[in-house]
Amino acid sequence: MPMDPGARIVGHESWNRYHLLSVAAPSVAAAAAPGQFVMVKVSDQPYPLLRRPLSIHGRDGDRLEFFFQEAGVGTAILAAKKPGEGLDLLGPLGRGFRPPERAAGRLATLVGGGRGIAPLFFLAEDLHSRGVKVRVLYGGRTAADLPLRQKFERACWETRFATDDGSYGFAGLVTALFAQEAAARRPDIVYACGPDPMFRTLAGAVRTLGVPAQFSLEAMMGCGIGACWGCVHRIRRDGRPAWTKICEDGPVFDAADIVWPEEA
Amino acid sequence: MADLTVDLGFLRLRNPILTASGTFGYGLEFQPYLDLERLGGFVVKGLYFEPREGNPPPRLVETASGLINAIGLQGIGVRAFREEILPRLRDLDTAVIINVCGADDDEYVRVVEALGRERGVAAFELNISCPNVQRDGACPALAPEATRALVKKVKAATAVPLITKLSPNVTDIVAIALAAEDAATDAISLVNTFLALAIDVETRRPKLGNVYGGLSGPAIKPIALRMVHQVASRVRVPVIGVGGIMTGGDVLEFLIAGARAVEVGTANFVDPRAAVRIVGELERFCEEKGIARLADQVGTLRLS
Image (cartoon, rainbow over all chains, first blue to last red; front, side):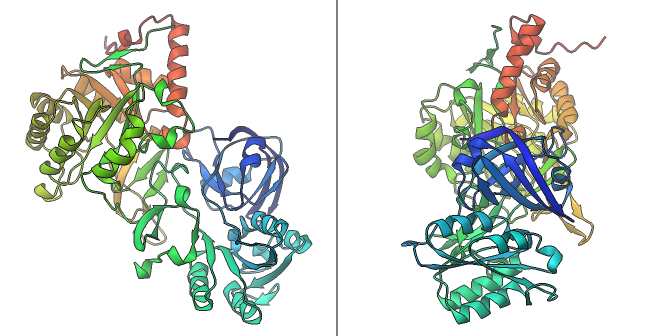
């Protein structure tokens, strides 16, 4: 299993509480696939004790990018790290996104909400290189919650933006933007990462459209390697819902297999 | 090279490092990261006879230098373990120990009967902290009589050596240890996790789906060490120390307190190579201090 205990931070951009780290991590980078994640040790001290899961945002040669939002003690320590500092990475872990069969010419719509945009850049690059027509829908509460908008605007696929307050792009939820887009042209496949309410609305929309979808779930994780059974979500397996490990069996699942709490 | 071997009487270990049940999966999860044969042995995740669902999430919450878990012993059950997992473990040159659970005394017995004649099982570790339907949800670990009764039944059902794992959530852990010894347990391991609670002040709700969970990690090490010392001072059977071990230095503390072997737990989550790293740290410690035989350190706490 590749690991990079001696990875090194080579870049750090930040926008308020959002951060983009660029990390030289040759072994993990070589093995990484879109939708996979790493477990990062943020401190050598006993608190915070556990590693933090970070989805892989992008890859450039032997460098990996991680996009995250400061949300607690672990991410706050990570947010204070500067280029030149070392970082202990375990990964790449988990099962990532699967490209569509007969990829060339297919239309894939990628829906990201808030920090959930993180894994979709790597995925968009990968799908684009396979000849898939990529359309990204990137939503946030305000323009300030779309810190990567310029990066997506510069990319060689189409991105549309949505803000709840209309301060940038479409005024409304990213799921409303999705409904509008899908009505104009039905995608062949949908990929998404974001908060639970976004997933639930989108799950209903893709079911109605009859379009396959893959969602990347987020969870607090103890180990990231399937040993602790701490990060489970209700997933249908052989038709029957069971507590399923997000780290090992996911983080990406078929939307049709994900059971949301009110259905359970 | 120092001699790290451990003689538990019923079992010889390459070194005193075992892994704690529930923190090492079924062992196979760690094969990409370490050589299982470098360990003294490992204890697989607690097995009920039947497969088990586990608790609703959130199942984990991190606290100061610790982790509270309420996994609920989700697991595959004896049949899947015997058919899918054990064949991949039994030829390893290391001690494979099976942690045994039960909803009532009968289920514990069924687990050891089903696995006791299988090749490659070095010992059973009895998880007496399982909530027990027979005792209205109270676990056998909480009372000496219930512990004695359960250990007797399980001993009568198998010839495989038995380690009884004690809960720290009791008023007198020595009384429970003596009851297990009286019922002929071959060894005692302690401690299991400490019953704990974490609260979200915004919502006033517990942070775990199960409300309470078990606290592990460096936060509990001093309490575990005290309990190991109390028990090791009173029982004759070997004691295995468990609780917050992160380094070779932590292992030595447990040995000095009277443990003959230890189980590394939460550290496996932080670093999947932790158990083997700790073996290396013990080797270096012995070399630096000129210790020829690590077992000579056991029970050497100076009290005067």
